[in-house]
Image 1 (cartoon, rainbow over the protein chains, first blue to last red):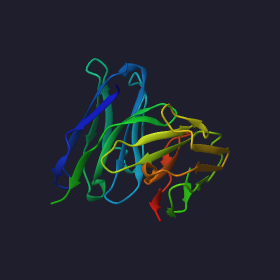
Image 2 (tube, chains in turn purple, red):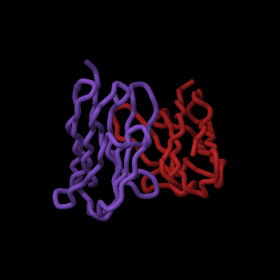
Image 3 (cartoon, each protein chain N blue to C red):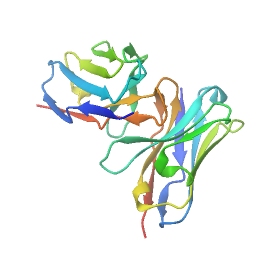
Length: 116
Length: 106
């Protein structure tokens, strides 16, 4: 059974950093591109970033370029999102997802609240 | 690519059929997915490639379209279908979602 379990969310002050993790199991992690998708409170889904199966390519939405870094550890089957210079508008639930012709599997999400 | 999804809200009764539209601002071939969002559950991929049912998706769901215009149709609504639905294009980066359609019980 495919499982994606996010962790690392919480309350953080504007301008500070936070690192999210996503532990994957139930599939061959290094065969798949992986992504982070977020959802602000009472809003729709927004793609954040994607990393290729081998980590050689990364893609970001414009609003997080230069502030967020997606990475992965294929030995540990874990996806990461390093979030720096956080802003109030980054407040959202962050989901990790397995990407292939859409997002076939999603985690339950971890809430990041950016507030002073 | 901007994805324009309509309607934002839809009210229907069990047994009825409904359709949700998703329009892309430029051609995305058939690189479109549909998702179902329900409280407390992981988001579910229903359809990919515009019309291909993901494994486990009930046959009352169908997708159609290519290029810029796409439709999700749900026939014979069941109680478990009342949820929020999103379309998403994966033809090019940045990947983009529609704004969502909330399907409510009438």
